Image (cartoon, rainbow, N blue to C red):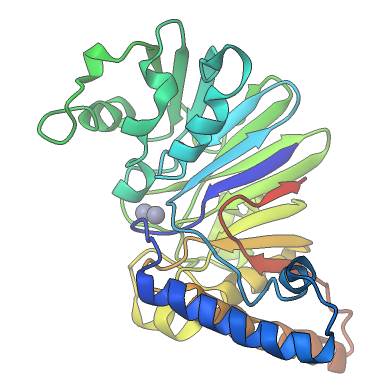
Length: 324
Ligand SMILES: [Zn+2]
Ligand SMILES: [Zn+2]
C-alpha cells in the first residue's frame, strides 16, 4: 500500500507570506552565487537538486491523507489538503472524482473538516461517499459543515449519496485488501488514530496526539497502534520544550515520537501537524534540533551496550508519498 500526505499543517492552513518567500529567494540566490564560484559550469537545475533542503517548503494545508492499494483508496480527514486531492481525483477516470469514496475521520476539530465543502466529488450525482468514525456524532458534525451562514450549499443539496458508518473502537474493519483498526490517541474531544494493514505490512497514523501515554502499561490496548508497523505518521506540532508547557493542548513533539519508534522498532516516521505560526525556516530548525536529540539517543544506547534501532525519519511536507 502507499500513503500520500495531502496536508501536514496543524490547527489552521498557513500560506507563506511575501517576506518569507522573499527571504527564501534571497537565500537561494546567495547560495547559488557561492555554488557557482566553486562550479562555474553549474546549471540552475544542478543547483536546485543540490540545495533542496535550502528551498524546502513544508506546505500549508491541514490534515488530509490518502492510503491506497490497487484495489481501494481510503482518505483520512477532510482538512484543507482534501481540496488538492479532489482536484487530483477529478482528473481521474470519467472526471467524477470516483464513484465510491471512503473517508475516515479522526475527530472533528476545524482543521480536519474545513476542506470538506471544497471536496468536489460530494457535489457529483452518482457518487457514493462513505464517512466513518468511532464518534457517535459523526453525521451531525459533517452536516454542520454545510449550513448557512457558514456555507451556502445545504447538505440536502449535495449531489452525491452520503452514508455514515460507526467504527468500533479497537475492532478492525476490512476495506477490500486493507484492514483498518482505530485506536485512541491523547487529544481533547477525543481523537482516534488508525492502523492500516495489508499483506502483513502495517502503517499507523498517530496525529493529533499529545503522547501523554507513552509506556506500554499506560497505553494498554492502544499500544497495538504502534506494534509491528513499518511506518508511522506522528504529531510534532511543538518543540519538546513547548510541548512541556502546553499541557492538555493535545499535541506532541518529535522526540516523543522517536522514543516510541525506537522502542517499538518502527523503521520509518513522518512528523506532521506543523504549527501554523512556524515558517519553513523554523520547521527546519526544529528538524535540526530533533536530529541532535536522535543522534544523542543513538549514541547513549550504543554506549550503554545496547544495539540502537535506526529510524529513518523526517518532518513531512505536503505531497510526500511513501510505500508501506
Ligand atoms: Zn489537528
Ligand atoms: Zn485536534
